[in-house]
Length: 156
Picture 1: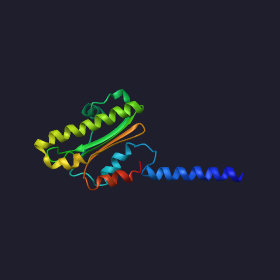
Picture 2 (picture 1 turned 90 degrees about the horizontal axis):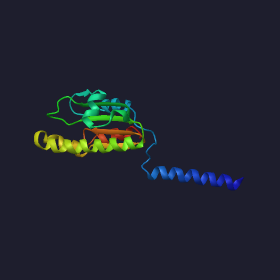
Picture 3 (picture 1 turned 180 degrees about the vertical axis):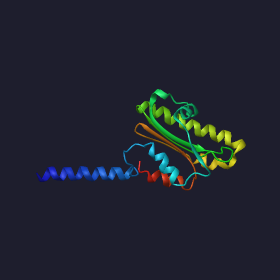
């Protein structure tokens, strides 16, 4: 009995250390409520406007049949801000990987476009967060100083 308890404790300790080595991220997926949490965190400049699913999927070039749920908001005045936030809940791992690639391409495209007409947005775009957890993907472009802490506070 003592050997079994020791093995269980050793496995438990190894698991805790492994979680710590991985940055302490939870296995929990992003939720559409995380969009509101980030909006409330005050990490976006100017007024943000919610975007419906159809517009979002066209904007990001994502197949609607792979999306189970989503939420997003974009800067109302895109001439002075490239801020945006989106969470997509996808049907499976492959769809999530494809969406992550599409969101990374969105950021790259925005950097290229903003170089000409909105250079002040470049630091926010260069610090954008694109993160996939399970079958969910987050895109957040906002204050490069405050956004990482706000995303980290989501506990994903």
